[in-house]
Length: 413
Image (cartoon, rainbow, N blue to C red; front, side, top):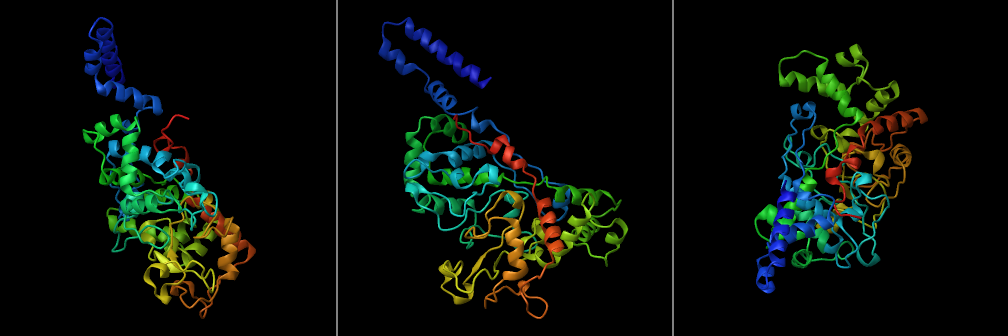
């Protein structure tokens, strides 16, 4: 309907133009909004600010305390354009999406991404869709809140985006330059007026729209999600507290729980996957749970090296006790986000599991959760253990986000 109105408006204006001798006057009367609409239509596969970015996560996550902050649809749609726009980088060749690819759960498939002027980034691009809901994950749940970047130096997407634009290896742009580039593109006026009522872009508006778009991302249709949702429905219980207890028991399992004895593990999971669950929850979940309320540690030294060329958090604090401390990410969509670690050193999940099994270094900053069996940081897994653990890790991925049109490149190829 909106498209038809503007095309009709343009047609009437052109008809009046053809009937007039005073061409200059009537050209000035041509509705600017009609031309702006046509410019936007020529650039995009549909008008991006007309999408629906509302999300709903599984009820078991709501019971555990996760709540989605619903996106402003128009701002998220404009954020989608900003996210994919290469004109907002120094050499007009790099966008946010260049390093955060939808097909890889918005991570990159190389250890170090290519930034402006062919520079390589200093760290592996972290996935944005390794969460059930971005807005819910990066919030205070049970008194704890994760931060952004490998060294957790950003509190939210707005802060993260500003730093990413300015990074000389990534996009090489100060925010004032970004705003100028936006003003120079003919496809932004229509979108900007749709969202803000005028075309006077500000730094704050740019960052707000990016935050709305990224905040709407999420991936919550994995085999694990479906299994825990089924578990919640197996029992007719009256209170949220009891449901919380049931979900927790199914997730943590173990032969000592009544639930595990009765139903033999997570519903819908294979024997191998349930054995993998037992290994994971005993050794990994406090730092890497795909279920956000169960994660307790959000940054740690995991013993990759004895001496770190990239010192992680210590680069910011200058403290020797922070050397080797990096963000502990959620593992949702882990099957799609290789390579792994802050430097992308591991190409496969098998390599990651082998590392935690035999190659963890006894670094003095090693997190206490890494120490077990008298202080040994290595898991010493059998070949079957490794196979089972990897089988369980694969239940964290769903791949839905990779084909979600709302998060795809809006520009015409």
